Length: 160
Image (cartoon, rainbow, N blue to C red; front, side, top):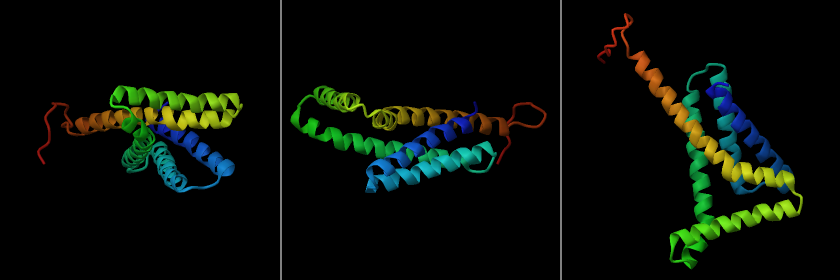
C-alpha cells in the first residue's frame, strides 16, 4: 500500500464517519470544519493515487488542520480538569478517566457505531495523521535529495 493509498483510506473512513455523524446527530459548527478537512484529505489521496501535483501539500494542510483542531478540542475538554487539579498529571489522568467513561457508556448502550466513530475520531485518526505527516516529510526529503543529484550519479548537488 503506497502513501497516497494510506492518505485516501484514512480520510475516506473519516469522511464516512463525519457523514454518519451528520445523519445521526445533525450538523454543527465543528461538523462543517471537519467535513471540509475530510474533503481536502480525500482529494489529496485521490490526487496522489493519480500522480497529480500538490498532493503532498494538500495532505500536509489536511493533517495539520485536523491535528490543530483536535488538539484545540482536547485542550478545551481538559481545561476544567487543569483548573481543578494543581498537578498536570492528575488533570491528565482525570481527562483520560472521563474519556474512558464516554467509551464505557457507549458500550453499555450498545451504541457500537458511535463507539467506533468516537474511537476513530478522537484517538486513531490523530495517530494516523501524525504517521502520515512523518511519511510525507520523509518521502519529500528523499525525493528532493534524489532530484539534486547529477545525471551521471556523481552525487554532486546542482547549484541554483
